[in-house]
Length: 126
Image 1 (cartoon, rainbow, N blue to C red):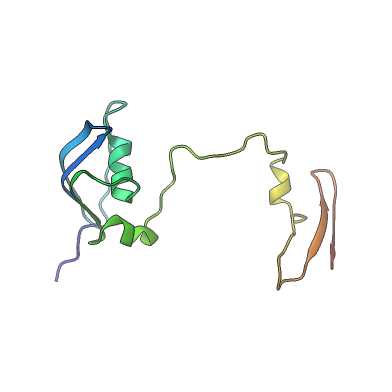
Image 2 (tube, rainbow, N blue to C red):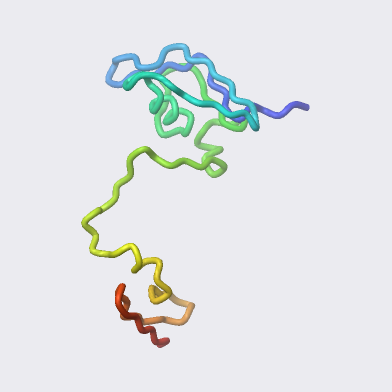
């Protein structure tokens, strides 16, 4: 019995506000294959990836990931988005979250109270 392809896209269509972006896309990526998407800005690369991840719903065709619709196989896929929502004004240095003095636990673990800064640190167990 053969295994389902890692990604199987057939007859895929998608439009943003009625404007077609992808039409009749067919793609098969077998397990252990490497694939790259290249093309111009606005060519539909990110849209195709979002459809494969199940973040968008196609207007036609189908997408299968590991033999299942994307929503059912999501726990088996890793994805790093192109843009993330990061508060770059958050007042913390690079060293503070990585410091051993960043030792705040929640119940049922012991509660630690730390005075942490890049210059000095002290922790005590409550």
